Image 1 (cartoon, rainbow, N blue to C red):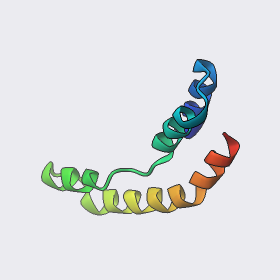
Image 2: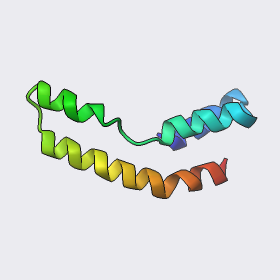
Image 3: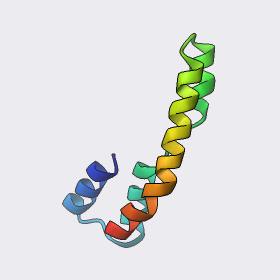
Image 4: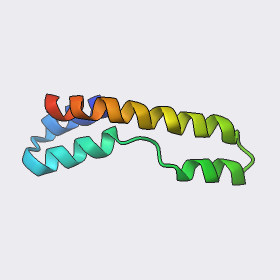
Length: 70
């Protein structure tokens, strides 16, 4: 998703704060409310919790990379 956002940022010619905000929002991890939604709708809650945890850790590790690459 951040790579697609980076392409769109360059295509639209965004710079400065606008480019940074668009890239950060694309690189953020999955929302934790997805777990509650999955539980309430009969989904696989433990798997969703694991995916949220993994996306949060990956987000922490890769967000500085994406911001530096911008």
